[in-house]
Image (tube, rainbow, N blue to C red; front, side, top):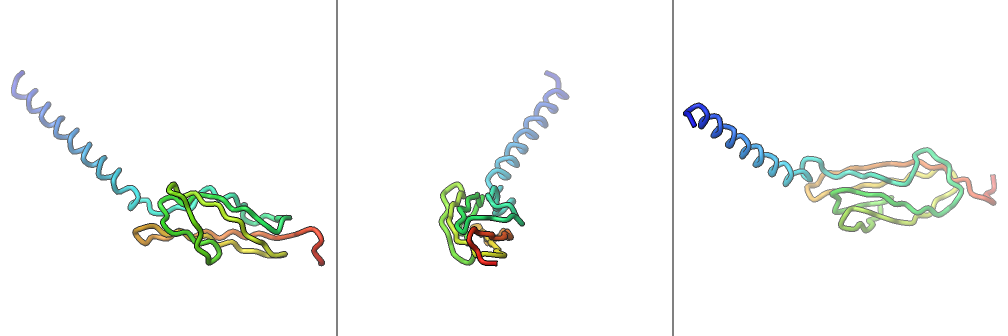
Length: 121
């Protein structure tokens, strides 16, 4: 091997090493970079519901604290949640707020209209 080839191999090896270090650092800090996210909630915003009881499910990725309409609810290790709430006739707002271990917050509001059978108009 001549001198130029050794230099190129050395530079390539160091480059690969630093790329691996940067990738490892990014992977370790991805929760801090991306923060908390509320996803896959089974509510369609603006929809009309005909049942006064609703089962709400979803996922709050990276959350340690989840609040549904001002009340803390439990989540599993993967951030999945499931809760049953009562709806009122007419206009309802469902507020979901998630907080992660770094203090970042994600908040979602869903608006529903309750039209239940037997309701007086």
